[in-house]
Amino acid sequence: MHHATSGNLDRRGTGDITTLTVREYLSRRGWQRFLYRLYRNPFVMFGVGPAYQFVIRHRIPTGCPVRNHREWISVLSTNAGIAAKILVAALLVGLWPALFGYLAIITIAAAIGVWLFYVQHQFEGTYWATDQAWDFQAAALEGSSFYDLPRFLHWLTGSIGFHHIHHLSSRIPNYRLRECFEQNPELWAARRLSLRDSLKCLTLALWDEERGSLRSFGQIRKSLRARA
Image 1 (tube, rainbow, N blue to C red):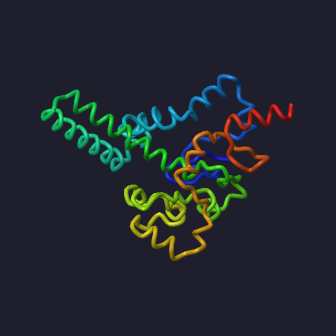
Image 2 (image 1 turned 180 degrees about the vertical axis):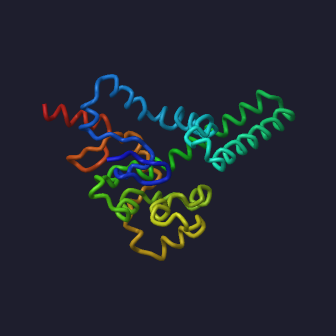
Image 3 (image 1 turned 135 degrees about the vertical axis):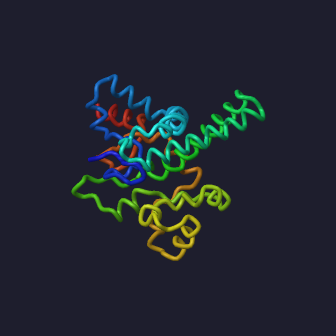
């Protein structure tokens, strides 16, 4: 089974977040378990991770071969635009206030962005299948949640809560997603998550193959103790 590639559901259906099964986790050495637990810690997942990804990783196009000129030009031109804005702000308010303002805004925005995509794949009954059994439509409808946000937040986030529709057809513009959802009852079968429901996803970190669901480290630990 594969981990996710950018922007798509993987065979496990968990989006861009590396997720181990209970068996895989228990087969790891102690230091490897520690690193995985550190990686899945909310402070790292929604703090350090997004800041690194958006402030550093996305600004260096090392993932693209140099021959892919369009990708390099796109990233480097974006970097130039960011630098120009910071320079203008620095001339107006000073260098350190400009840098602090930029880093604060990008860090908060990155954390929110990662959270929105995280909860729409990392929920208890998400879709999980091997290469042979994987099905595109099932992965889109069962591996992506409908994040049922208040109307204002749907507008503010570009209707990304209708994430399952996006995976079925990424060409549907965001301002048509609600209309598409309301006119097609078969789309209502996706797992619906409210704001309160989504908070429960924070601790889910391991796929329990026996139960067929994502579970927390604490839940797995209790299960192992009960068996012992």
